[in-house]
Image (tube, rainbow, N blue to C red):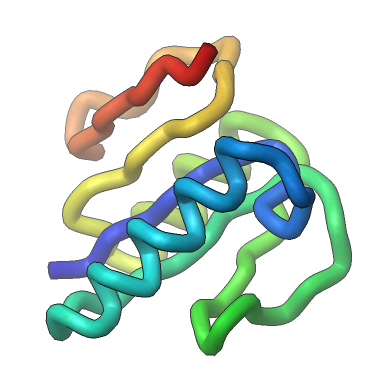
Length: 94
């Protein structure tokens, strides 16, 4: 399975980012392909997982579709509904 995770800044040191890193590493260890999508930062990868920089919701969805992501897991707010043909899961942290 190809899994994408989106957070505003995946390399930050907060609780969401720590949680996200643990999940992504475990998914990768289980044999899944994993990508991070992030609005901020210049990292090319974290713990061997590629980081794709996206500045808008449109860019996020387009990148996820280009990479043939099976599910896009949102860990941050987006302002635009995803395309009909993109499976999205949203976790609300707080």
